[in-house]
Length: 136
Image (tube, rainbow, N blue to C red; front, side, top):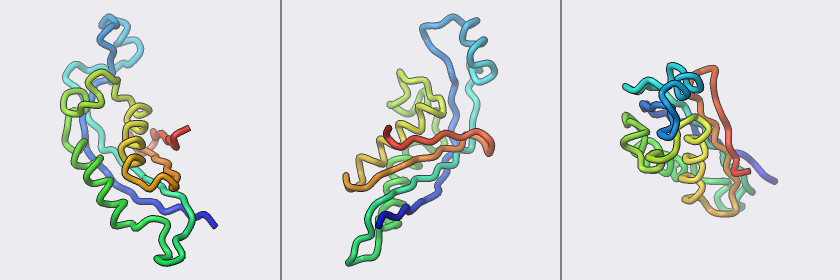
């Protein structure tokens, strides 16, 4: 029997959506105010959902304390109060859209989980705008 265990977390970060290889006009046309050269910020909320078989010894799919520590180390410590474009190596050459951020978060968490566990990450950029990724 498979069960999903979820953990909610948050971080605050600034970013700018733009492509270095595009003109200012094209960046403005595509990304609008999100292309502000002085950056803008969000209060990101994320939900990491881990699905797997219940361990018969512990009764856990995943120890939530372990999941909490993975999220703190891999995501909150790395992204919180950072400029994603300038301070986070994964975004030096990758546009930090919500779609790209959720994929990076997924990869960072997934690499620390037992390979038999499935993961889905949902990232809220605003209360109304969110993305999800499950590795597919």
